[in-house]
Length: 321
Length: 299
Image (tube, rainbow over all chains, first blue to last red):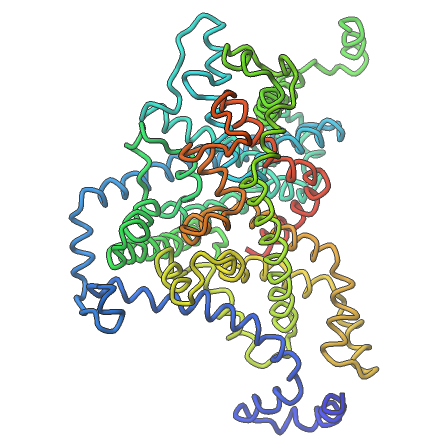
């Protein structure tokens, strides 16, 4: 408290005298409590976010557990050369891009459609109930969603197949055949995220000036016209921003989602890059290869975000960074 | 009904739009698609085995029984997992909140020397991180594999939550209030604990929920870090082995093995693990929506 008082007395004088050099010293004396608070979070971010980054060096070493980190040999980009020639890598790369691009196509557009529909509902109670139900899947773990999926979609006793059979059709192996699995994977993703994704769009829509709609009504614009010429252009910035954010994830994809939905029968599309990293590194102990693969993925992801941002700016949007 | 809409047409000269029917209808369909899976699984979990095997259970239990739940509550390993999940979630949330508040308050002070540098240090992990293997090796080097700490410490700093908290403090608390406190001689600790935190209760609730629900639902790190020590498996990981992989069987009391259809047990396990979330869901949904919008504004 004493320091605080003394420093505030001196503040006006020092403001003019202070050079950048002793700015730190002065600030520490004045704001030592702030720096004290920062110590704990700094420790955590340095230990758990920055310290692992040094582990990325393993990608450039031929890591042998017996020799340890420093004893292992530097090999430059040899590990990368090695993994790029592995059929497993080619397939994981293809799957990652395939699953995430298709996911972007469906899971990204569905919330926009739903938000436009929800916006047309004037009855608050009806809207609220729909929103509550639509948000629900977002709160479940992928384990629960995976378990639910098998309860509903399995060929032998899934509910959906029971209904299909009752209607007189043949049972469909939704999760037990490769291309069907891919479709189910995408559908489940849409199911999980469609409601939650509407929140941001609904917020953006609620910010639109109502006079625009009134003027359009006077000019004789119908519902569809207003949606197309007022609502959509007004949320364009939001759409582009979210698209950029999601483009960066095209190289990532959720490990938990693939891992909870996979099974032993359908393996064609279930090996994505994070799954392969897990298999190589943690299951087989091949840390150099797994680290290199993870680094490759992270680097491409950063490039993708930066590129998408650049493109958005070229198109005249605000961009992200 | 027909007559009524006709009168409206005459008086207001407004056509009855087919979209007035189609839009609510498609929303009802979408909502039902979200709800029905639960109704089905809940019905299944209360049904007698025979009906489930015969694929006779749809959206209402047939041959009501609590047998499956009795078996779950008799299974020590499931209860043990539930206990681990609760302990981990509570301690993780408390630690995460402390870290977030301790970082967010200083970073929201414009006069903090080095603010840009600190913000950069804290936000870089949003874009780039070491990844699965470097994280794993760190946990290994710290000797935390197969300990409860591996589930509490590594993820407790979240750049995303910090971002939300920071912008909520900067925008939500009037600077004049803080200025007058400082003139009255209050230091930063006093301002933080007596002014900023009491005024930030809604956002604190939001972030605590982000931490808690995120921790409760995650299983990736547990899958990586908890290998040998089976007793430390949180509920989600336990369910993974039990239901999805089916590599583990239910430890039934009295060893009457597989008298029951595993499908009913699986269904009741799903309900058992979803109940905590479903019970609090109606109350926490509001905070989640607010938090998500705050996060989006800043992005």
